[in-house]
Every structure is written in structure tokens, then in C-alpha cells.
Length: 191
Image (cartoon, rainbow, N blue to C red):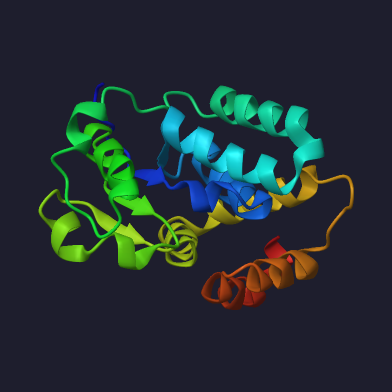
């Protein structure tokens, strides 16, 4: 797989599971702010968890996964499996994420599981860990007009229910993005 000249981030399953966060992250990627990556293993992990919690939504979950991969070209990292056994992390079940980041030439792993990806391990591969809140805020701070336009477009795509800009900011805060929400409150008229 060729490397990307854009900032590249592997999205862990726990950031793809929540619909709102998934939509924000993919909207930013679709706007070419960064290159979003995941693996078939990561896809299986978040879809399996969502299906466990919402068994009646199997078709919608599968359709969402397919739509994501159609919307984000070159999102799937493959050929990482041989790296897994040689990696050491606090939770062996997370080694596939780091292996994908290495094989996918990622700059960062976006996850809520900070303790499972120690900086000393990631540093040796030139990979940083960012929480979703840090990552989304960084995208807004680096290329504000593009990021805000992407978030506004995301909000405007929602039809059921329609959401005001203020309500979106409140949702982001309640879903664990307080820094992002605080910044967006200052520019809510652009959303």
C-alpha cells in the first residue's frame, strides 16, 4: 500500500461505534482534511458491537459500513496481520490496531483507549495517539473553514430529526467532545 501525503489516522472501533462521532470523523475525512483508515477487523469489531446492542438494525449497520467504505476511498488497510504477533501492548487484543497503523503509514491512532496505547510504544513507530475530542478540535484549528463547512454539511444532511447548530454542539459535548463543543460555541453561527 502506498503512503499518503495527507495526515493519516487509523480509527479504532470505539470511535466508529457511536453514530454521531462516526459521522463527524468521516465528514472531516470526506472533506480531505485527513486520510481515514481502518481494517476489516476494526469494521467487524464495531459492527459486531453495534449489532449486539441493536440486533434489529442488522441491515442498517451493514449498509452503514458499506457506505463508509464507498465514501472514503482507500480506507481499508490490509497486509498488517504479520505485524501483530511482534507488537507489545497492555491489551493484546489492541495489537491489530497498531499493526494497521504501521502498515497504513498512519500518523495517529484515534481512540478512547488511551491507556492501551502507551506513548513509549507508539513513539517508536512515529505514531501518536489522539482522543476523538483532541483530533476533531485539531482538524478545526488547522483548517477551520474546511472543517466547519464539513460539520455544517453533516448537520444539514440529517433529516430525521433535523438538528440546529446549537443542538449539535450540545450533542457533541454530551458525547464526549467537550473541547470541540467549547470551540464550536464560539463559531456556532458558521454551523
